[in-house]
Image (tube, rainbow, N blue to C red; front, side, top):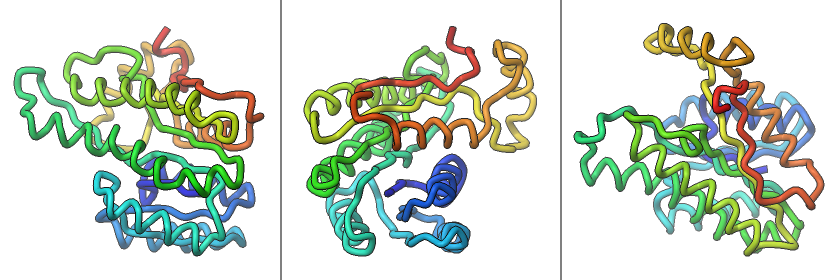
Length: 235
């Protein structure tokens, strides 16, 4: 399995869940080299092959070189998890062109580029692609116009890829809602969101990792789906 942007947070949880299930795992990182090294040690403790490769998912050459290295080290790629992304809160009228383009480059161009470069290896293994969407791609958030738009694009990209890459490759997306990752600055907001959620709690990294692992191992016949993992918040 290849998980992009997995030195921290949800990516790390997904990578560790895959290793716990016996998968060899490659992760990518951009600036978090120290954290990536720690994750590789944690992955290897499960007795699997593990490596970390520096990659800027917005850059075609960087992606091409990373995919080749991962395929060489792991002997192929059977599951790709497009997790690397950026998130920021900006009032609508304060979103600059540079900010808009940067979010789309990481969140939408990134999954496209990595998927395109990994295609030959995934086809050979009749593999799976899991894109990380967002509840923000399904519901409008007033202070996240660029982020929400980029994730809505990922959801459509998922559906297009599911049609374009069938029957060899199944492509699905996981759309997390409010996920508790321990950021102290967001504690009050997260408490408020938990009360608004039918399940009366925010999600955990384990909730998201389990959904990704489901798609990684699900029947090939399940494709083109966007699964909201949000405790019912989007209802």
